Each structure stands twice: as C-alpha cells, then as structure tokens.
Amino acid sequence: MIEIKNLTKRFGDLLVWEDVSFKVEDGETLAIIGRSGCGKSVLMKHINALLYPDTGKVLIDGRDIHALDYVDLRKQRQKFGVLFQGSALFDSINTFENVAFPLRYFTNQTEEEIHENVMKSLTYVNLEDSANKETSELSGGMRKRVGLARAIVLEPNYIMYDEPTSGLDPQTADEINGLINAMSETFDVTSIVITHDMHSVLEVADKVAFLDQQKLSWFGTISEMRNSNHKELVDFVSASEYQIKAG
Amino acid sequence: MHSLNEVGKYSSLLYQALRSSTEFGTYRKNLFQELVKVGYDSVPIIILTGIFTGSVMTLQSAYQLQSAFIPLSTIGAIVSESILIELAAVISSLVLAGKVGARVATELGTMRVSEQIDALESMGFNSVSFLVVPRVLAGILMFPVLYIVASVTGIGGGLAAGFFSGTVPPSDFLQGARTYFYPWNVIFGFTKMFVFGFIITSVSCYKGYYARGGAEGVGQSTTNATVLSCIFVLLADFILAALLL
Image (cartoon, rainbow over all chains, first blue to last red):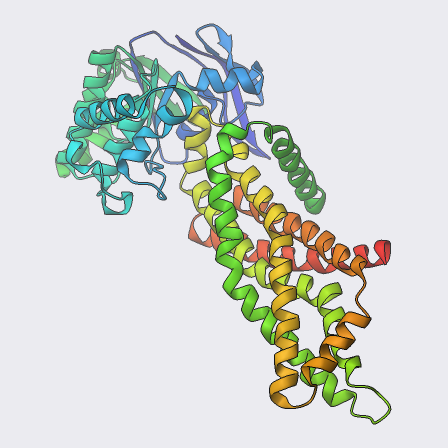
C-alpha cells in the first residue's frame, strides 16, 4: 500500500503543492490528474524518493521511504517499475539490452534465463520482433512499450506511469491503455498513472486524485468523479470530454 | 552565494563518488569502456598535439637563439625540458578538456534531461557509482599515460623538425636533452596529469550530472564544463608549480 501523508513541496519560493494526503490500496490503479505544470510528475518522483518533500511522509508498505538510508532505499525502489514520460531508454544499448539491464545487475540469472525473461517481457508488449533494434529506430509508441517491458521485467509490486499516452496517436494510446489494464490484471500490481488524458483515466483508473491550485483538490472513485459537482474538476473533465468529442 | 552553492554541490558529488567507489561490480564494465574512450581514443589527437608542439618549439627556439656563442644542444635541452615539465601536460590537458570533458558533460547532460539518470535511480541503481566513478577513475588513470604519449611525440617532433629544417642536428638535440634531463621533471609532469585528469573529468561529470532543461541546457553545461576545466587546469598548474618546484 502507498500512503501519502501531508506532503508539501516547494522549489525555492515556488509552492508546488501543500498538505497532500491520500492512499493507494494494493491492486488499485490511481490516476493523478491536473493541468500541465501542476506538479503531477513532481508528486510521482516523491513516491519513489527521486525527490524529497519539505514536510510530510510517503509510506510504502508502512515504511517512510524518505527516512530510509541509501542502501534500503535502493532495495525499496526495486519494488517499483517506472515508465517515464519520454521512456528514458538508454540510447547506448539496443532494445534487448535495455530490458535486460536490470536483470544483469540485480539478479544472478544465467544468459539463458535473461534471454527468456527479456523475450517474455517483450512478447508481453508485442515487441518480440524488435529485440535487436536500436532505440533510435523505435517509434514513440514502441519506445513506451519497451519502457514498459523494462519496468515489468523485475516483476515489481508497483508500477508508475508518467504520461503514458502523451504524444501518441489515439490507436497507439489505446494499446498502451490496454497494456496498463493487462498489467494490473495479470501481475496484480498497484499502479499510479500520471496523466491529463481523461480518456486514459476512464480506461484504466479505479480512483482519481485531482491536483489543482497547489493542493489535492479532489480524490475519489471514477463513479464519484462522474457524479461530482466539484467545479474545478467538472471544468477539467468537461474540457477533456470536449476535446475527445472534437478530436 | 550561487558560487558557494555550486562548490557545495560539487563537493557533495565527489563525496558520493568516493563512497560509491567500493561498488566495483556496478561500474566495472563502464570503467573499461571509459579507459578506452579517455585513453585509447585520445591517442591520435595527443600525438598530433605533441608533434606540432615539439616542432614549433624547436623552430622558434632555433630562431631566437641564433648565436655563435650558444651551442645547438641548448635547443634540444630547452625543447625537451619545456615539453616534459609543462607543455606535454598543459597543452594536452587543454585539448582533452575539449575532447574528453565535452563528451562527458554531453553524455551525462543528455542522460539527465532525458530522465535516463532518474530511470537508473528508480531501478535501484547508484547512478553516481555507475556514471561518475568510472569516468573520473578513467581520467585519473589515463591522463598520465597520455602524458607519456605527448612527451615522446613532442620530443620526437622537435627532433624531427630540427633535422628536416636543418637548424639542429639530431645528435646535438639529443645531447642537450640528455644533459639537462632531470627525472623529477617527469614525476612532476605525471603528478600534473593525474590532477588535471581528475579536474577535467570531475568538473565535466558535475556539469553534466546536474544539467537542466533540454538541448540548450545540455549545450550550456557542456560549454561550462569545458571553460571551467580549462580555467581550473591553468589554476592547478600554477599551484602545483608553486608547491612542487
């Protein structure tokens, strides 16, 4: 379980958000939504301690991740798979090696076992034929899928997706949404999806956290969101729905 | 205040690198790659630098010391000692600040802005151990080796320039070089390259590791890394000369 308690973050004089609190139960998928620049990715980077808060705590399975020493923190981070916005593939190695990367360093698997597990992950994201491609040869959607294959290869308990569908055509975005759902069902992982794509939210999320005006403005389930009369949330959702219809 | 903050962050990165240097398994593979990139790949430019430095030194010395009272062997002594004590180390390092320093800052800067460093950390890697330690170690280990290349080619270039221009016969050049050879000067040259290797790679790692923004940010961090490396090399050159000579 991920529990965020009274989290506040500033960059110098700039308040990103304050007093943010919510829980993500095991097996749930939470979508964190909000306008561009509202601090969604900053919040995500607090959950695996890539950033540290000014005040507040992030509890992962009951342990305050920001209070861990570096050795324990690194072990704790291995419970997470992260799909970054730009996929963050290592461009000095090919697709296969990108996915094999964590296996080579964090397991004692033989070459055969590594090959088997990498191909399993790549097959899962329908890229088994692209194992030998250089990352520069991959399209945006393929890069996201390789990033996802790398994120799941160590079978994490938690997966975080930072804008998984941004910059993708609607069909590829749907494929990625399908993969996110499949991850949750197949591996029973707890997921956090950072997005402003409401179509994606409706496809994958169980709960929604809405960041607005430097605070957690609204938190609830998808059905509660549909029936909510919270003005800013309704404006945000209806603007997105208008875009979906107009698109 | 900003400069103090930079010094603090640089010191903190070095401290983390020092602490991480025990994790040999994390950076072993990268270390061998970096030894090749910093050392082997720099040999051609260092040979070129050495040959031209030695050649120009010989021709200029011969031009300035045209006198019946100055033996030709003096030119060999001046050229070889200047190369061993100063030019092989400093000129090579200024060239390497451009070649090695710029590459290191660009690589790490690009990895930073494309979230590859965040990806490493989020997988549970120690990114400083994985990226910074092997680059700094490669600088410390390979710069002294490149000093040997620069010295040999510099003296060789000087000797050849004297011979082909007809200004200094090789026998006179070598006699002067041997007569005024002090082993301490070579040790001094090695010491300088050891320090310069550390300065250039650590400053470039720092600038790349903390790069911000997109392509412009990476470009800025690369420029800063090269300029700062050159300034610190010249400063360290002065300090080492004041302390050790």
